[in-house]
Image 1: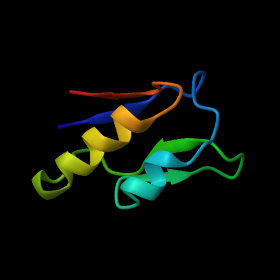
Image 2: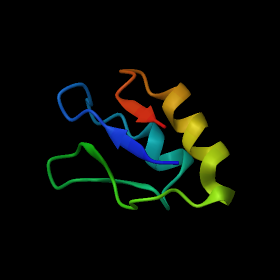
Image 3: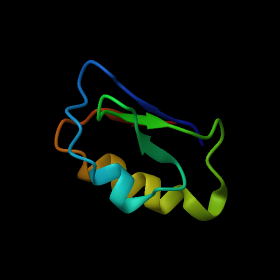
Length: 62
């Protein structure tokens, strides 16, 4: 699984970071970014929760 964050949509709420800090972090500007190229299988549910919980729907998984 791969995850991406649409930087134009992200508003820096940090829900993704709270739910899965192993995959997401906030940039110096306060917006989310993905820090792993391939999501480990054991974190896939957390990444799905982060995508579902994103208020801006800025996270895409595939």
